[in-house]
Length: 605
Ligand code: F6R
Image 1 (cartoon, rainbow, N blue to C red):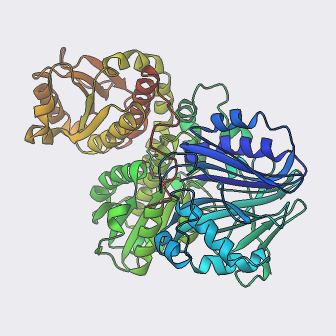
Image 2 (image 1 turned 135 degrees about the vertical axis):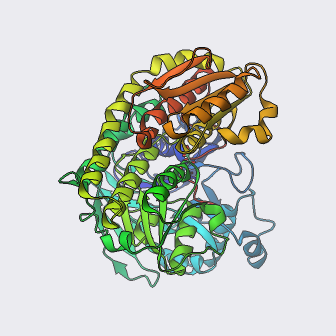
Image 3 (image 1 turned 120 degrees about the horizontal axis):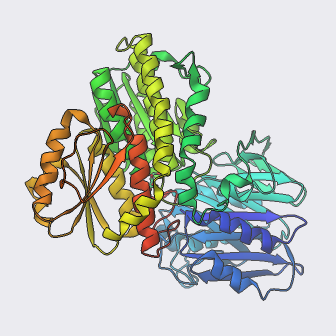
């Protein structure tokens, strides 16, 4: 939930840390701070509430140079948004930054008699004092002991006053990557902070200690035995994490969707059919399962809802979708014949990870659909299907959702093929339709100005409703989430036929209703439901196939969607839903990429 970074090397650490924090800011933006090891080995803390820009301003006055330091951008969990609660925290000889949650911080406060010492309300400062209590001049030894006291999830970067120029780091669950480059040594919550300096990096293995000096990065296990890191190479460049002329990352990422879809689909097509040989996913797991259970959070879960509506009627096996934070505390009806599909852009969402671990403990086969290589979910799943969206920086997920869908559609097609629901020709046609959805998305992106014009009907309203039936209902869920998270308009998605069982009481004059009517099978029924809300004065924005028969007066605004096979309508439709949310947020002058209270990757419960 927070972004952390450590640097030691020949360059100005203040500049490197501040630039890195700007890249990591999407992980949390309640407050930010740096700790700089100055030339006289004194450690100087600079901490500010609010965004990294406030911290940058606060750092302007510092004239001294520093070549080693830590940085942190915070998403508040323990304790409010105050300077005292802002990282880095100091305890005696220790300075540290932390991402995660120390669940037993209260017990540690008692066990280590810390009551009078704490300056903040954070679990992180408690951890700093525990480390200080255990420190006898040997950092590796102290860190190994330290982690044996901790319960929860963490990644820490630490400096020891008597080891100037060195940075230590350790992780359990929360992510951390490290690299040694010509510009010095780096450790950070994710790659976006490192790519200006290197393409070579490694994922810090759990329960391993990293020691950075300006000449090298060392990795040790908890017995302090040095081990060799497994190096990886970044497949995207610095540009991918820049706005490149777009006013916001979200708009850029909406535009990147057609390309991201091609990158995800095309390398996995062999003679017109989906093929997962290179992903080392055997057909047997697709062929032999008796049910599918999809688990994810938020937008990723919505991709699962679409996949369910597609898969169950085609494969004729039960397909269930669970919210990961619920699933992990249930006693799910899954077994070794169940294929559990876990979906996560970041691959670090704590509830999704816990759900994956639970599924494995039941003996289920696990397949994850993940965007970030080297992430914990990817590493712990039996099989992984990587999506190729590139880095997604805007907090509201857009391109990650559409590539998750593309991957799930391919899994569905391959399953239909190996289970005999499809012959070769049907599977080839399915893949052709999937590829045809890409130009349909492009056509929708071109409609951005008309979407921009229509949001005037939304931005002054407190509520909005999204309705649809079947697959259209699954798309509506994502439309409502996008709108509420970045425009703060209360939005709800309803199965169109369900509205009259209570919610229709909220429909009054000019309440915006975004109706999705792409599914021919239920089109007439959806139109009846639209009439019901229109009769109560709703302002209707209707998304409908361009050749669908729509009578005059049924909607206030009609957005024609290119005619694709009904099952693929999500691809063009979601672009419009994303643009509605985007322009509503812009129209209300809000922070599109960093909406309030949110953070990109939710690594705490
Ligand atoms: C909404 C959004 C979130 C994420 C959710 C899961 O726009 O981005 O709902 O989809 O937090 O995150 P991942 O996919 O990283 O597991």
